[in-house]
Length: 172
Ligand code: PRP
Image 1 (cartoon, rainbow, N blue to C red):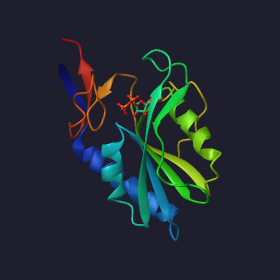
Image 2: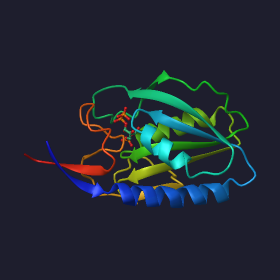
Image 3: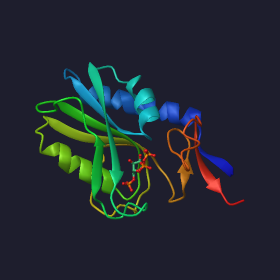
Image 4: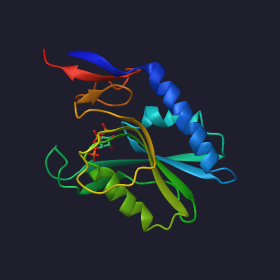
């Protein structure tokens, strides 16, 4: 496959440092629980967390969409739930990308009923205008065009998650 860099490793690192500083300021004096949605978000979580300077712990969820692979149904099945009780906690969901927004919309509703003290979303990438549901995303790394992207946690049939940058797949 041919691909070209869309967001470089240096740009990602610089932006995550800014986001981490913003999150550090916003949550000053509070404990934070970072929740990442597997698998794609693992790299954003690892690198963003290194720039957050309030006490925090981390937990993970794995989800899959019902219906066809296009995940347009918006119905999400939880494959792995949190190990942690989030009642009364300050929760920040960390994602690699918001596309249709359906995954996060479902997750937000699912987590909200568990009674967190606060619940916000941070994403490295967001494709503006493609959201099928209104979604309040507090921390956004980069707004990108609606192309299919790989790298930095994002896959194409399971591959390319290890690229240190975000790239756009190009036609052969
Ligand atoms: C990606 C990404 C988000 C979701 C965003 O995960 O990590 O969870 O898609 O899409 P949406 O805004 O249209 O709901 P994916 O389902 O590809 O799983 P993966 O992270 O395991 O690769």
